[in-house]
Length: 254
Image (cartoon, rainbow, N blue to C red; front, side, top):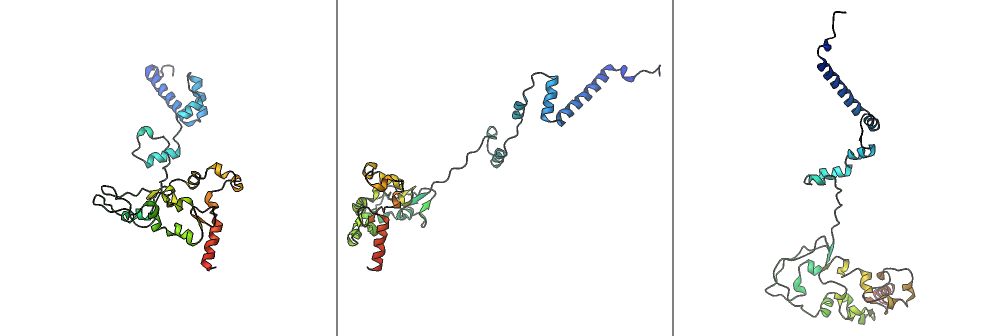
C-alpha cells in the first residue's frame, strides 16, 4: 500500500474537472427540486445582486388562462399581442324599418321616375341588425301627396277624421299631420321608427316649465307613455286609461 499512489494524483486537472461537473449537477438538482423560497435563500447565500423573490415570481409568472385561450382562438394575432386582453365584441345595433321601406315599396309614397330604381328588400320582420338600403341610381320622385296628408292614407286610426267621428281629442302634431316630428319615414334605431327616445321626444315640446304646475309631474318621475297616449284621448290630457274606456264603450255599442 505504501508503494501505490492514488491514480488521480497523476492527473490533477482531470480530477478538478470531474469534481466541478459533479458539483454543477448537484447544484442544478437542488435548484430544480426545492421551492422558490428555498432556491432564493440558497442563491442569496452564495451570490449578491439576486432580485427579490416577488420580482422574480412576476418575471416568470405564466399567462392568465383567459389570455391563453384568446391567443389560441385567434392564430392570426401578432406575437407582441399574445398576452393582451381581448375586448368583448360589441352588440349588433338593431334597426326598425317602416314596412313600406323594408319591402322596397317606394312607389307607395313617391312618384316613379326614370332615374330611380330600387331592389326590394326581404319582406317580414320589423327589426334588422343592419340598415336597409336599396341598389340603384338617382333619387325617388316627389311625394304623391303633401306629407301632412300622406301618412293618414294608411294610418287612418290616428287621423283627425276619427277624432271628430268618435268625439276624441287628438295630439297637436297628429292633428296637423306632422307625423315626421316624431317618426322617421324610413328606418330608425328605435322602435316605432322614432327619431329619439320617447321621453326625450316628449320633452322637446313639453318642457319642464310647462309641467311644473301639474302635481303628478312633481312626484316620482315615470315614463310619459305610462300615463299618456301619444295620439288620441278622451280629453286634452290624453290619458291612456280614459282612452281605453272610450274604445271599450264603442265596441259594446253603448
